[in-house]
Length: 435
Ligand code: AMP
Image (cartoon, rainbow, N blue to C red; front, side, top):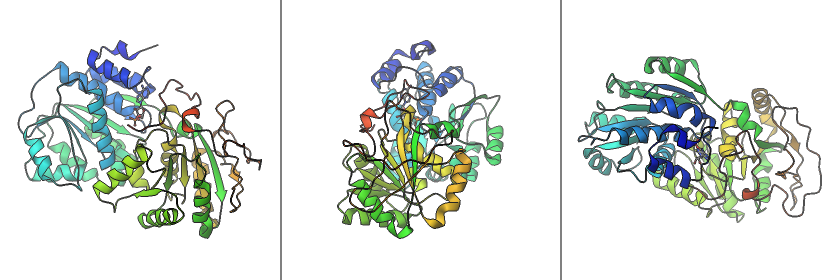
């Protein structure tokens, strides 16, 4: 079996990987590290949660250090484009973690924060620049960055970039890159426009595809609760009183909806915060940090804000509103199945949302088991996820859950640390505590 040590990575990078607790490469790492090290272009069809950041960060760090040189003023040696600020921060953090023993400069450039410090940092030249497209264009216009010396260009979450209207900005960034460079292109799905962009960008790429939509879904114990729209908030509060919901991500369809849910939870004495596009950068970071370090048990998010957020040990995802776009359901519930660990996803379905539920079930090719609920003090949700017995699997027709008395210790599932069920990649790290 291939180990990290078989790739010929710099020993200091291997040390960092080891101290992260990674023992075996994930499928995308197995397929992507060697070709990236060899300088090949790569098309990776992979979602977050598959270990894709390390799949590109480790070989990129190796190449930077193997060909050590100082980036001139304003220049960056590698450029990673990411759709959201949160994801950009996370990617940069991973570069810093894996490259902590290396003399490399890693920086992020995104909007919502002052541009001055970014200009000063860019002026010295950087090795790894992680940017969102809008703010990078600002820097290009102000000539506070030069991209003509980029050696490796990474486009991450390309399909999300398309959804957010970033295709033109990306094309403008690409025009500023040198003709000879390495390109790495990652996308969870390949709609036509993304396929075309990848063809324009990549030269003779290696194609790597991992984690088809269904396999994330398979690792999550999914339930739907049919509930009147007006009763959703009360149901959520009563559910969240159970301490088993140790780290719960709640999805609302709109920013205002997310705020209203948080207000309601706070009024009911449940500690919660919201993360969405109307929040300032520092508010978002504070909310995310509080959720990561366990100060806030409940984070209420919209789809865009949550996409790509990597927080370990999310015990439950609650779809307070069902998403309009069925694919979002898969992205949402994937937040509780990070790197091979299982989790629990509970969807509230109002009468008006039944069509959305049918579309989701069509996409994931299975029926989501229903749970009865009552709004009394002890909602009888037998949502225990047992680490020995397999949970209903998404790709088999799952039986409707029976109403059964909840196990005394925990009605909704064992604590995060005990939840791990050997998934297809049973070797992956799992545990509480955020990065
Ligand atoms: P990503 O898909 O890059 O968002 O990574 C998802 C999670 O998997 C992150 O928390 C990583 O720290 C973790 N991870 C990445 N590679 C490995 C590995 N080989 N073994 C265990 N965990 C990993």
